[in-house]
Length: 68
Image (cartoon, rainbow, N blue to C red; front, side, top):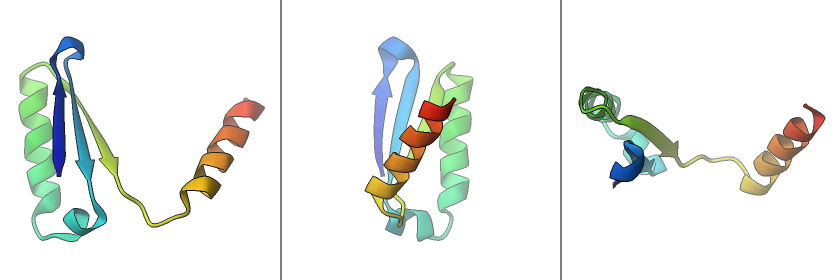
């Protein structure tokens, strides 16, 4: 897990791998971190690794946004 604090934006970025997401107690730990950040007045953003094809997912997102 990689945690990057962006104090200028009051933002905390958390980057999580697939293995970390599968570990026991991960969700509880993540929830605790988010609550701590919220109490400190920061917003938390969690980026989770996925198992789908990045190109296909990005293409679908762009096409969907284009239609809006």
